[in-house]
Length: 193
Image (tube, rainbow, N blue to C red; front, side, top):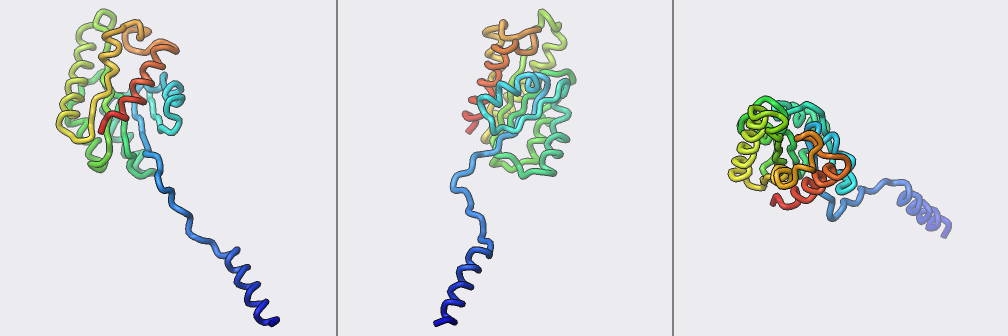
């Protein structure tokens, strides 16, 4: 009887001390990465209010030419995101569809992509700089029409309709414009399926 109790006690101790495999979550939330410029940087707190789990990288002055290297840096430490928001169309240097596509090509085809359209008021910024932003928007629209699981997120239509959302013809007002931008992005990526 004593031997039986010893074995029973050992079995209980072993069950407590031996680690078991962690239980996998049945429904994990998708990972959303937002890569953007100063508009993203300025609006990040508002976006976090709508979507606290979003990974937000807003770097003032950046443009689509930085997208591939920023995405590579993220992928070096993390698995590919389930969703990627690209908000890099408002700064200088006309980029091409190829610039966006090279970066997007780093991700699995199952990644949902949202391209945030931008606008620079030509009355404030001049026709040439505004035209660069328009070309970036046209590239985004073309990519969204040709790549599955990709859409544009309409910040441009929102500010064209109501320019009072902008502080200087480019950046959102505080806090109202930032809140509208964040709402547009937070809900826009959800429609990119």
